[in-house]
Picture 1 (cartoon, rainbow, N blue to C red):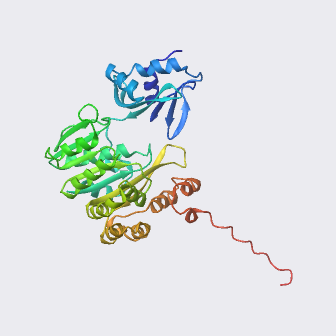
Picture 2: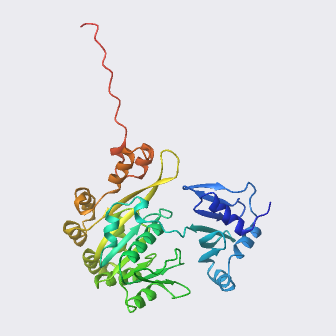
Picture 3: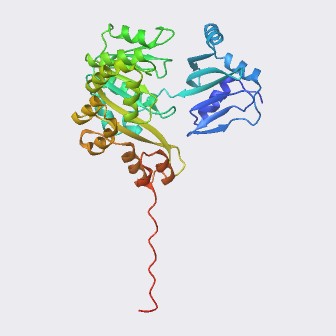
Length: 362
């Protein structure tokens, strides 16, 4: 049976998948709870894959693909849902991945976050970073935080996205969603202009380059709440990544800015459940107190984990503490705990207790 692109996308949603992959000489595949599963048995020929993908593009998008060999875009399919598409070339063939975007933005409480995530939504200024690997739920968390802020505060929220994923409705706050490529040429340019648009909150879907990071820090310093995402696995590496983007002679200034402007870091990952029923959220939360800000200022990042471990009253929590809670509740296996934690030894099974045998001489 020959399927069209709408049927493949619909099948992805029906199976509860997060992503649809179309590749040359491979069957169409869907990612479900982190694992790739084929939809059909027969592989797709390159021309068939190309036709399926081009059916989703406008003429201008096709022109962009021909010039740049890759393209990010949003796709709304009537009766199916909204998707974030990425078209790219692989060994000379057109291929694509489509991420399903659930438009019912979940409440922050339902995602399994620490209470500090709610605290970040009440900040009036500073830089708050949501980090994690691809597919760890960063966009969903970011959308939930934006919704919480919009519903509970009166102000102007400007989002800069590439492409626009979740669609927000105006509530107590006015929300302006700007798409890079159609509403602005670049993240740095859009971010500069956002500062002149009377914002209370600026949302940067992804901080990809030096200029975007520099302007975001300046915005956070000048009284705006800036929410952004990064592809980093934990809090210390997030700080290191932000600083290392800059040339060595500029890093002291950036460190000083970051130590004062940082509002918090939320690092998350999704871990398979022990019962096989989906995945569960583990998160590392950094809420900067005086000691942590001082460590950032002096770039003693190796001390931050220890300060987070003892800083639970401020809302801090390490990834190992989060994983330990999940493991103790039997939500994840020991193997998954060891794989995802920072210190595997703390999750290794204790050695068996030697059996006591009675001596024949007593």
